[in-house]
Image (tube, rainbow, N blue to C red; front, side):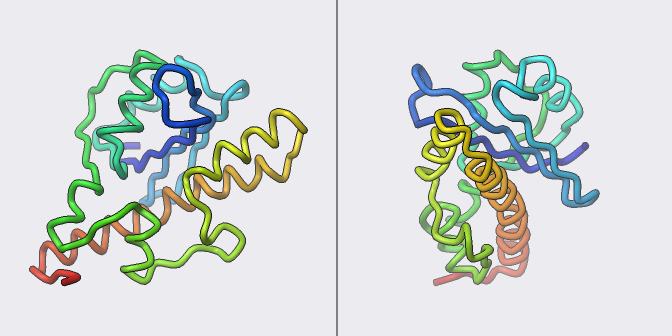
Length: 169
């Protein structure tokens, strides 16, 4: 996986007390999705192996959240170029989070996860862990997958608009 989109889900926003529940990697060229899940497939070794295969990692707000969270929890080392779409958006006059930008660019999500925000992920994880709710886990993984696939679409649109000099304004 030379280039990958990466997104994490957590139990909250605190680097100190919250935990990473899902780490997703998406390679759009091969349409390859890998999701590592806490207490199943997510551990330092599997994470390090995947990250070492990546030359370019693309995230949304990953420079401030996802990568620092991973570094603190799993002591990963950065050996990749990191492109943060959140920092590119202003070049074409966009503001807001990923879901808001998706709406502005006409990128749609499936109905059952449309309208979900980052705060939904911790609740889905809690339902899965406390009640054994497998549907909650399926929805959490679907949400993470959508974040990755839609980030790819948003990134493509922003790159095209930056290249052509067009903006949202």
